[in-house]
Each structure stands twice: as C-alpha cells, then as structure tokens.
Amino acid sequence: MAEPIQIQPNIHCEPCKECGARPVIEQSRKGFLVTCPTNRKHYATAPGLVNIDEWNRFNKKSPVLTGTQYKSKAS
Ligand SMILES: [Zn+2]
Image 1 (cartoon, rainbow, N blue to C red):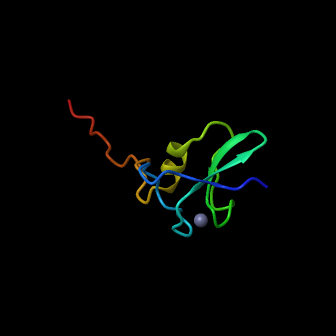
Image 2 (cartoon, helix red, strand yellow):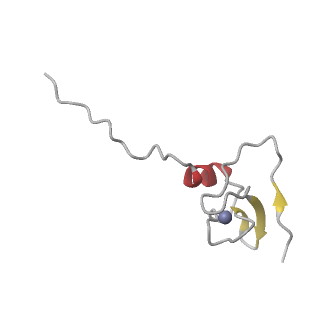
C-alpha cells in the first residue's frame, strides 16, 4: 500500500533485466526491498535493508559469475 520510493538519481542502479525500468524502493512489513516498478515478479530483493547491490548483481547484463578462465595446471 505504501508508495514506492524513488532512488536518488546519483545512485547507480542497473535497469530491470526484464523491462528496463529503474528500480524503486518499497517498504514492506519486514523492511525495505528494491524492486521493479512495473512488476515485482521481475525481481525484488529480500526484505530488510535497502540492498541495491543485490539488485545490481541480479540485473547485470553480463554476469561475472561465469568463471570461464580456467587456470592450466602448468608445472
Ligand atoms: Zn521490470
């Protein structure tokens, strides 16, 4: 029911991976969550402290998680 809080423009946020919208902060009974203004199903961080880092990590276009650089077992 609470209105979403706009994130300050000087804070870096990745756009929503699904629709490209800038995320907003919502307040729930359990705390704040960073979520997509279009549809919370696109992504929402776990309620608690505002966690823009978590949002950014999920919505990054090229995830750094794919560790393709295998080190050869030389020597
Ligand atoms: Zn979205």
